[in-house]
Image (cartoon, rainbow, N blue to C red; front, side, top):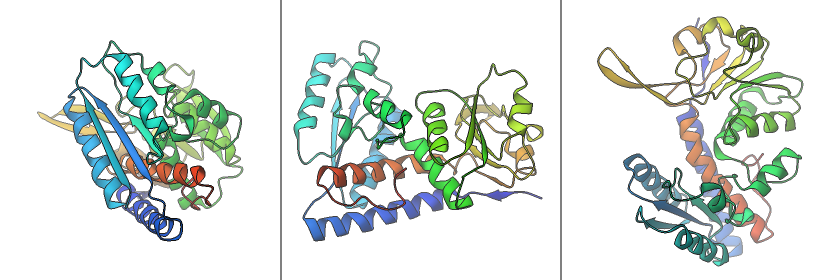
Length: 296
């Protein structure tokens, strides 16, 4: 019997609707319109599509969208100057610099030049430190989306055993911090973890974010566990290119109690949570109550 498939598209649509409703109230009651600025350097086709989708969804949520497209040979100094201008712009509440950046730019320097209060990606070292010490922070979008879906499915996560397979700064580490914050007992594992299968089988919640196609198989999953597959991997199969996750869905879905598919699981939540973070940043900037259920 296949476990419950968590519909990320439907969940993301609900998040966007809640964001839009809160934005409308914010504009009506306080005369404030959240603004998101996205900076794209170069002409990577995938990044261009992603940025365009962000812009469309930002406007649909009733927010202001500011797009800055820079040539690939733009100097690092010019990019940093733009970031500082956006930091000082009161109409901009969220700033996102699309990664990856060209090789001649220092991504860490650029990210850490963003005002931490406007860092809606949650990558600034100040936000990383705040999250790690359990304080109020801007939280990376993908882990936040995973947490929202887990809370919606389980209600409370307190006391559950969670294993995060992956140790990246973008997903693995912040995901573990968020689960700790919800009183889970958390293990961070990775591709070099000894007896990885046994570690995974101990998890009530298994989050796969290791970046290896279908690495987690059904025999590595505790019966009834909730599996969150963050991986997006393009593979060639039967002469066709297709997207798969870090979890082998076919074998995992008959063991898991609930599971996210790829595509259509975690992916749609990333932009939805970006909008939620922009709304949160705007509320904090204006001393307005933050939206319930849209933050960590």
